Image (cartoon, rainbow, N blue to C red; front, side, top):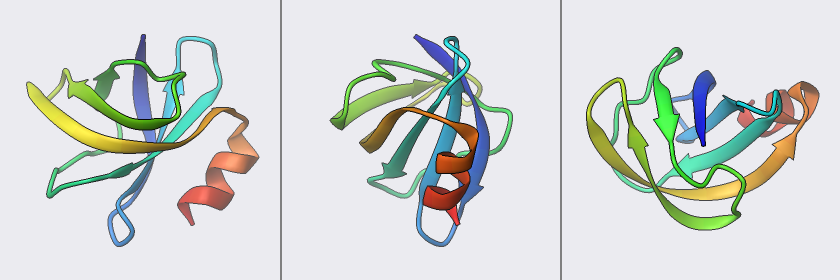
Length: 81
């Protein structure tokens, strides 16, 4: 599945990706990765827990912890804030 980064909290490392299903996956970066709004992310965006995603924009693998899947926009805003 592919999604586009819509929200980033650079302090906490939390990221919200809008998925192909028009919902949000919220994850925390588990390393020193630079993820920006507009980056395309590929991986198991509907699986909670530890995952490895591919940042297609930056040609980089990123280790993440998926905190929430299938979230709405309001839930994503609360988790990223």
